[in-house]
Image (cartoon, rainbow, N blue to C red; front, side, top):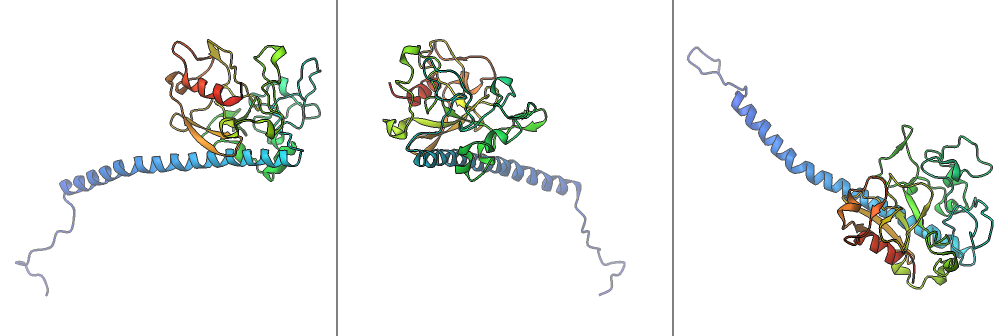
Length: 276
């Protein structure tokens, strides 16, 4: 039917009020969905980092299986026993450090190697063969730290008591608590291996815990995952550890307060790093 002067025309345009209502509804829906999407992303990131540590732990077990049960070393130097010379070990689980210190320079590597952004400190070790050459699994996906504008290649460290060194205990007590073979670990489910280290603290691949400390502590776990960090254990299981102390969650630099009151996060690391 052709419209006439008396036939009303249909008005298909939104009024301003209707448009504002639609915008308000979209904003409400976005406000409801975005937190859910953010939580889903955090869960996915947590799953990835737990899987990374799981892979590292498995590689450590495979390494020991081919080495008469001897574990891959965590320290910069070969078996740093009492009275021995410090000889740098190119077959630690990783070499170099994430702060580019000359102290960790490995003989034979280029002077400008820049270990924080160069995977050479990962790939040149025998341990990496048990990771099938994978280098991405050494970095937590939630770690946003950079070195000279580029992402650092590693977020994780290895418990210093795993074929390493107790650098805080008096010399006479060295190696009474350091594990060199997997069979020596008396409580595999309660002894951690790989840990996500705080990006402001990480240097070499050696995570040292001072069991005798009464005031402050040096090596600090990360808090990338909503105040939590992943921990791998000698029996192969990994878990996300929720930080309980605000002094650990909010840590930035310097020593970590561990007393007055007791820092439960430090206590957990102390209890799980080695046997008594």
